[in-house]
Amino acid sequence: MKTALVTGAARGIGLATTKLFVEEGWQVAMIDRDGEALADAVTSLENVHGVDCDVSDPGSVTGMVAEVQKTFGRIDALVNNAGVADFGPIEETTFERWRTVMETNLDGPFLVTQAAIPALKETKGAIVNIASISGLRASTLRVAYGTSKAGVIQLTLQQAAELGEYGIRANVVAPGPVRTKLAMAVHTQEIIDAYHDALPLNRYGSEREIAEAIVFLCSEKASYITGQCLAADGGFEGAGIGLPALRK
Image (tube, rainbow, N blue to C red; front, side, top):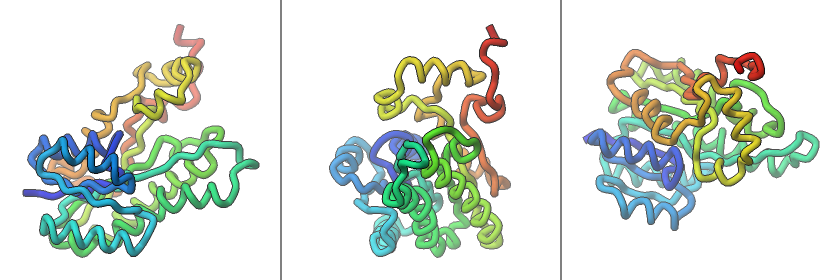
């Protein structure tokens, strides 16, 4: 049975991705630093194993990957999904806030991938990093978050270029606005309406839709795809700034 390692798996896109992998017949190592939420998620699923781990800590990452290999014996796909968001003006973004975002969003994928490379070499496995539309196009209040996600996209290209000779593929998914519990809690109706106007599909995406893109890129159906950034964004990037008034 193939094994996927998914970080940030206790909720949101990570949990949706885990559930889809299980549906597709995979076993999943669910990684998260929120031990309580992780334990709750694990109990509701079969063929999964939870590991409490902070992906920004090198020692914890090394131990986590070793535990996954001991439990499942292999890693066929790595999904670097764990991330944090911090929104605020550039002038008010302290270095501490900047580093908090960078250590999880960018250091994490670097560390976890590096630790998993030996296992991925054995399976000629796949890496899918989760960036954001904010890594492809700038927006207000996202100096740390957007920069970290742009870094994730470049990191993916480096991984694809260097690891391809081992048969390891590396791709990145850049979600646009997604209807997560967190987003719905902080997005006012005015913000929701503005996003709808800017999106050619006129709606937010679902966690399941992002999971579908991730699992596809990890599958044999994507066996000749590497070094690509897939914007699962309802057309947000392709539409540019847009002039909603002209679409009425």
